[in-house]
Image (cartoon, rainbow, N blue to C red; front, side, top):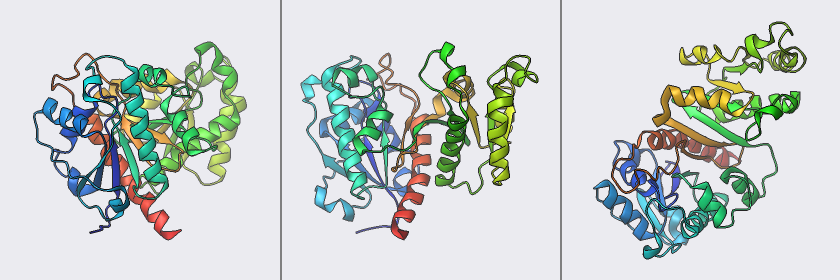
Length: 338
């Protein structure tokens, strides 16, 4: 039986961390199974491990790959990616990294084939992924390479109704200023705008953070605001886009907290990350922005310090699921209209 609900593929993340436990808890949250058809992708013993860790039941109903399009409710696509005895709780291992990548690859394949409308992955461990041969600096670039996607993409962070993206990311602070370009700012604005539209915002309100203290104070503390940011913002406004700034970075998140904007474009990694994590670490979500498939994950890590102890907070995972469902609905509708 088919339904009009989006179908979400869920993978367990790193087997050694809190991922399997989180997914077991998510599936017992009110409204989750009603919001989407859910396809668990991965080893049966990992899903049973998560249920045991969470102290809940999780019936697994296997679905053949050629029947996924007919699956409704909660289904399971069996895989064999890691032996049960290879799972070492709270330990970085190549075996766990290999399992994570194989489950991710399969979920991506299903999405490309149109069999699922979005992917939710529980936290990965980057050291384990690297040990397993991940041929990219992080999972976002790995996914883009796997998909053969060469367009602009990047990590977006979401907290409740607020989204952040950044012009520069994983580079040293000493290199930030010379990497702030008009093209980079425009792309970061566009990434936030497009992702928000996919999540249901008709006309996103976007604030651009300044680079320098006091937004440069008319050039006293730097000219990036005058020479780069202001022209890009004016050009966006001329196209009737709701983009404002540059706002001093020590006050822009006050506007965000008051609900005056939907997204903040920051200039470098910690400028946005510190604010978002202070505002709500246990509710943060990471979105793979720009990719042709809706993909989301909780923003926290594998939490080896509490793995296997039934202490994992499902809040961020639920937030990631809810956002992904909204994006997947749009993706499904667009694909049907194409």
